Every structure is written in C-alpha cells, then in structure tokens.
Image (cartoon, rainbow over all chains, first blue to last red; front, top):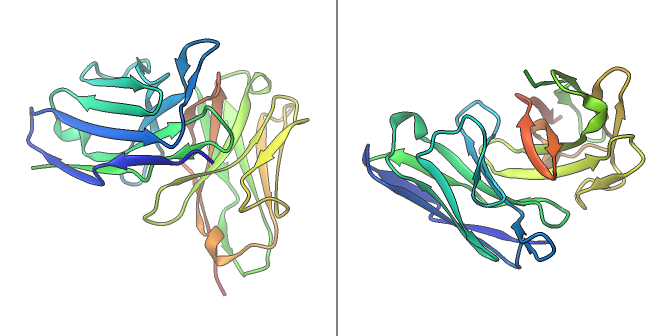
Length: 113
Length: 117
C-alpha cells in the first residue's frame, strides 16, 4: 500500500497568516501517461464529512476559495492557505488515488493562534 | 444538487451483521463508481470498498475482505454495504462517496456503526 505521511500533525496560525501543510507519499503518485498526480486534499470540520478542496494535486474544486492552493509532484505535496480565515479551522487530509487501496494521510489539525 | 444519504447504522454485537444503504440523488447514479470510507471515533479516514458502475467489479480493503460485500441497485439509485462477522474495530462512521474520474468528490454525512456487547 502507498503510505501517506502528513506534517505537521497540528498547526496553529494567526488569522490572516499563511498556513502550509505537507504530504509525502511512499511512492510516486504521478502517472506518466497523462502527467497527472493522483493526489487530493480534503477539509473536515467537526461532525461533517470530508469536503474535497483540491484534486490532481493542484486543481481547485468548484466553489473552493482561491486562498486554498495545492502544489507538488511525484512524492511531495503541499496545501497552502494564503490568508487564514476563522472558518478554515478543521482537519485536513491528503489522499492518493493512484493505486488501490486508496490511502489517506493521518490528518493535520489546523487551529487559530 | 448531488446528495448522498447513508442509513442503516446502529449498535450491533460482535459477530453480528448490518446492512448499510446510501441513497443517491441529483446525478446519474448508474454512471459513477462508488466507494465506502470509514472513520473510527477520533481517528482518520480509511477506505473500505469500491464498486464499478454496473456492480460487476468490486474491491475491498484487506481488513474487511471476506466479511463485507458492496453492491448497488441502479434502478433504486442506492449503494449498499453488507457487513458480516463484525468486530469491535469496525466501529466507525461509514461514508459513501462518489467517484468522479477516480476522485472521491462528494460524500454523504455518514452513518455510525457501533460494535459492542
């Protein structure tokens, strides 16, 4: 199985500041035939299901604010929130869908400093 | 509007069975692969199973293989998860999710399964 490791496990950032979450996969999730990284980012607030933010590592899902961005390729990926808002407090997960079984990172808890 | 609503969760004794359902609306259900993903209380997300559009191809996590069975009824726009030989470690919120070009783009609110005596 592909192991997804996120860092840090938790993060406290001041309102309006940048938040950065990293995700590393145990093997590349870049599919050479289409040059796509099979990597997604999800936001989960308490009592709610995960919400897709980013897919193909850097494509923002419709309706997601542009302060959220994804980057990286191969095995190393980053989710960046450019200016933290109060409503961004949540747990964030990366997910690889390159190979079955689909696997998730352990999650990063984002809080307000 | 895409909607997925799970049902069928509850309290069951170890060794027991439960069938979860996921009612889909707002999209052409028969055109999408579907998944089940679970989340133990206070823990992370764990993929459970996947089914193709006509139900002919299914895939399972090793932890549930031989005990769980995913199926679908496209006429009823409903996804199922039959869970047998349940164990304490199967306790979790179970989510159904739609597969859009391999991305799980929409998730239901989940249904809680508690396995305890």
